[in-house]
Length: 495
Image 1: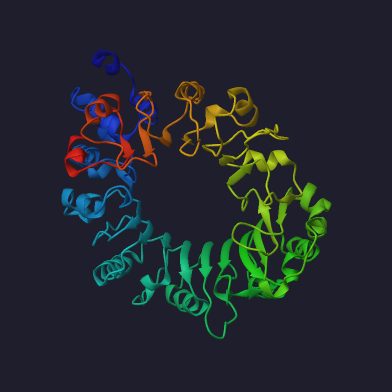
Image 2: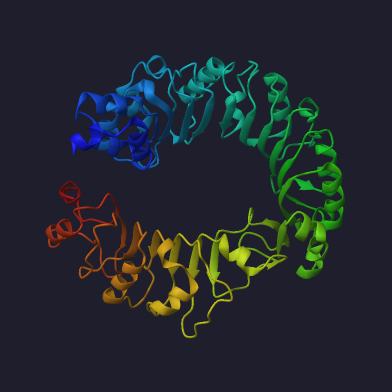
């Protein structure tokens, strides 16, 4: 094996590495010989630690060369205190990772106190707001201000102690902000932004949004307004009027009826020469009138929308979250979760049903006695949930959804689950990675599936106890992710 690798050029080995995880590359190729070690040391790594075990993180940190790391993603969602653990491996992180370009803190309790000056892209989302964390964030933002070109934060609070310019910044995302706070940030930053994403919350005496500072630079604007802010077509038109370079516009707002007027939008978008427009407009509770969906959609069926731009729109009288009419771009704002058969939330659209079904990712099957074949095929469903009395015939399921695309299946609410039939289902789902089901000791898990969530039966207190722990460990020795109820701490240790 080593001799065969010896004759492969570096470019071929790099192509092989592109299909492997960082852990697999380090475990499989390091210490074979000096040449292979040197090639591995030249390969640029992206360290994504969002879903990784502690043992793998430790292994990777022991064997990587910091100089070859381009990006790092840290998260506490699956491993508590991951940032602190990572920092223990690299106490001089800001000096060691001198090639680092991108850093993401995703739902972490804190951030690293110092970052390399080479870092140009930074994302921060913390779930624990403490003085220590806030001070760290303020410190690294001041340190990186002159270098950052991309910045994403979960709220304007991170800028409250910042009075530094960000001269190189081009892309800014603020997940929570008021208009007043945004104006202060924009004035302080003095940045020539080309892309801006904002969520704006309500405040007293709502001011007009002033984009004049970005009039000759901003190309891409994505903005969402709190439901408490009532917008109109005139207000939206007014606040983007100064943006002479704007080409890509995404907006989500609650407002007056004219906000849903396709004729007004067609005229304005044509005038502004907008290349891409995505929107989601919900009628305010102040306008609880019964509007016909087809009447609202009629202006969006013109040749401008359907032929020239190929922008499709859907309308719902009520949704799971609102009792008011909503219109939105598809597929951009299309709900990814679909109930089948169709229910009261099925939208009326200007597009063919194939456009809607093609972009659905999560499907819930709810039929019981009668089974209707769909008018369109769901070809990109990654998550499938069955709310049925029994498993439907495999032929029926294959006529509804492409089973080969499914990565997660939930059969925990199937009342009478046949293990034999379920195993046949699993064989057809060649990309299946995760199963959620009521635990059944007769179920023999396939080796290729390593993520399980087991639900206990109503009469059971625990799924795993001293009576079945040995058999469970024997059957599920390969499992990487497991959610289950157990009898005691000792059972956890044995698992």
